Image (cartoon, rainbow, N blue to C red; front, top):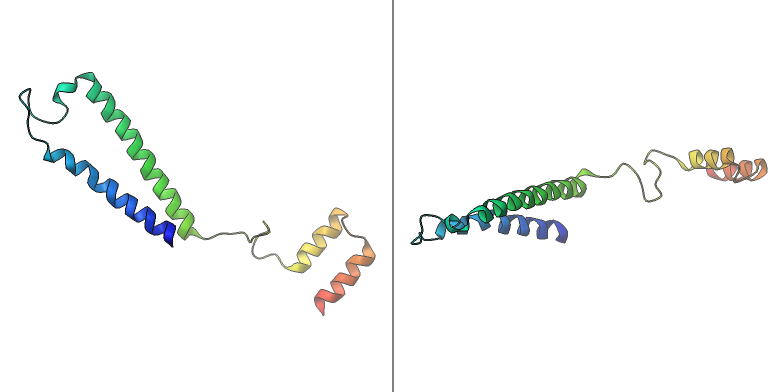
Length: 110
């Protein structure tokens, strides 16, 4: 929850940041903030567009991860896998022998 509130705060700050450029007064060289920068202003604008798109995409990815949920449990198996399925898988891989498989199966089925 704390990570989500930090993300919302950052998005709010960056969404109002461009508004400060409208507060610039005109200078003796012309109107606007970037008039005297020449080609440098154009490169800065392109770089800021890339940064903005990167931050936007990152925010979308973080929101999807935060609210999307997970299909797997902590062990990396899908959530619908039962302990008996895992036991069968271990037996099929040869990690346990037939005797141990039967004993553990009997314990699981109760």
